[in-house]
Image 1 (tube, rainbow, N blue to C red):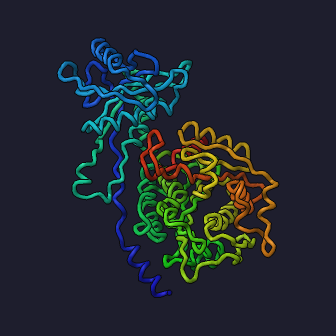
Image 2: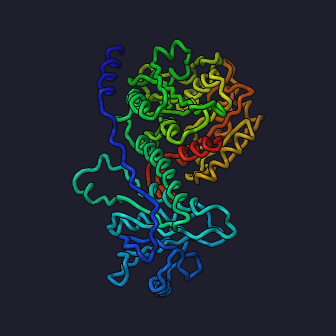
Image 3: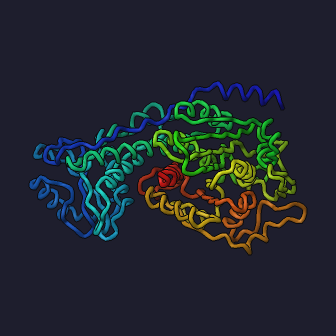
Length: 522
């Protein structure tokens, strides 16, 4: 067993870093719509309106408004209408993007419109998209720069493709955009440029996370993830320490090690650290579940249930992508990023239902279902985070199908023992557009976790199982430590196309939210 692990370790670590999907260029430019010779110019219309928004050229506006009537276009959110202007006007193509109802306009409406227009432009063989500034919401007091940032985010997130494994005709047929821009007036230009730069930075981090989650398990193993973190951390100005299985044994992380026992791939615990140049305003721990593949262990998943289980590393990947961005954004808080990387496989050494594991904090866990493995990894990581003396802890995990049943594919569940921390995360959700919804921690349900032979058991009744999973995690957090658990099982990976500006596959869920949350301390 030791020889096999050594050989596999060497082969995996020798691989080069994956070619991350490049982020297209996006800028704010001081050009009027009258002077723009865009490949594809994006303008807007509200639902139940025939008035084009965001355009100065009266002749072009009249032409487009007549087209709206003749086409019977209904400007619901995410709907677009493509117009080839021939040689009558400077833009080669104009895309009319629906914003939905005027009284429901928000930044997510703008992101959705930007993404839909980008997809329409790519389908029409355009290589670049130029956006006019979208209108303000009724009564809005926020500066236009916020709308500029939302446009850039919609474009950059919607234009993403994971193309690494495409070849031949499939690669040639794939239409991708090379860049985009937004037209801003001279007065708004500096703020718009700053907002766009922020959007590019945040979306680059999000798309990096999407790349890593989209990578198959054969390409990203625990050791491979450790080598990626080691290589990228110095470039991002953060510290990185990787603990191997021997170190995990010394730290007493029996639950983490128990999950890894059925796999030939050894586990890795990655500890990233960002420290600001000045005295930190706060000290935070971000904790991520990092199952590079989850078969369910001996409590084996179905074949269909395993098809997308490369996604089970999404929590740790979100932590990594967030940490790599903190120096660039000059975050004023000290942040510890903890990534628990392993596989959950049904090998001959795998843990069995009925086994008891001892965690690093000393508590014992009776394992009744080996497919409830993520909470075992997090149990040891949360105990470790407590020992760092942080002011608050946020963990992210693709933890339960029950949360997906409750909230669907677009929203994560938020569980917390602290109202102030919850409020900061909810506000970060509003700013970032990544949806979360706070769910309760009913104390009565905690009785379901009591074991006859250990301190706790790792599963409870079927009903309310997202809540009992969170209550299990709370067992390993200090009683006075503010803590929040984000169950991102639904929005981390889209199996359909229900998201307005994300494609099928990994979404990078959590990255934009965490960056907004950390930025709130600045």
